[in-house]
Image 1 (cartoon, chains in turn brown, yellow):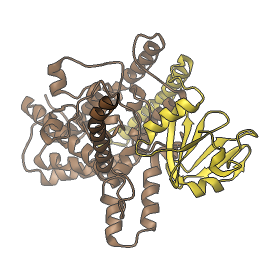
Image 2 (cartoon, chains in turn red, blue):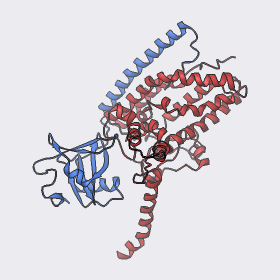
Image 3 (cartoon, chains in turn yellow, purple):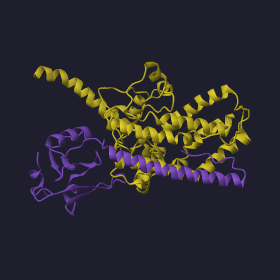
Image 4 (tube, helix red, strand yellow):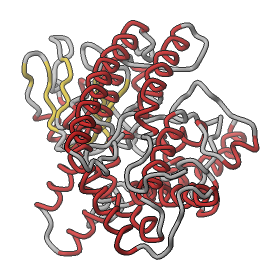
Length: 316
Length: 152
């Protein structure tokens, strides 16, 4: 059996398109019948799906260049010969690609330049299967695809990397739902699940910057970014500062526009670097909120509640 | 959702892939229209009522937990509010079945012009450049006697 190391034998995402359509319609119908927890707002849904469709079109412009670089690295600089037909190679690429995804996703949240590309995925105030398809238009430009090049450098064939990336994307689709509550404990312990990913999409301060997993939640547990969903505090979805309308161009480019505005007003190299590569919300005088400052304020409020509770009881 | 273009080493192969891509794109566009139509038909957006003083207080507490608003002005259609917290104006307005929150200087909020029955607040944010809240004769903006006229 031979597999083309350059051109993937199949594209998991393309194959999954009919499943996307069927399951979104199913989620809506079950929500309508009251059989599942699901909310859909028509304009929000149209925005999510149009972003997904637009991502496919825009991505087409950079896909050839990105694939070309990966192929060039593999053909000219690979360290090992990784056979596509070996089972262990698929196991290895599964774990290594998922680890790469974790770091890509973490950087995409914790550094503003890459957040500008990823933010649109979090811009819906709904959490449903359509939200999963609210994809970036500027991922190619942001350059996060460079993080996958070490896999080609190690020796994994570009086609193998592409297939595994597709499998990861398809896996992540189904976790974008409120219709599934918690799954068996062993599954929640190892795999990314709807519960874990709801936390990731939440804008409650306690849930910010958590659960970056693609397929395996073990990376978050390992690197200290795991936060479980607390039934006492349901996630509120969207951004810390939600978008003001459903304009697709605003959804795709608003953070880039914000960066441009800040850079235009920068007065030093430190400010330029901070605005570009600091955490989202960074400002020279600390007047804006970052995830860290929002969490600190939340902790202070929680502490004040605990400290105030005995006095309140005494007063009563 | 990016298809891998590598390996298209013959012209016929490239043309075949391009035609296949076009079919997938057209099919996806049709599917998007179908799914949006089903979402609109289902009417399963979150229930959202016009704001009243109680719901305004709850919403302000959720969106601005570190602020202590002293006065709240609710838009004539109940689809937004402006609250004063010190020298800041806390602005909330409805988008679909959700809310958008921003702050601006109270002085700037007071100076915001009213056009076509709506007070237009410049938010100076590319993500939400302007908030437009409905005003009426009994509920004017700015409040006639500064913040004394704003309903508590």
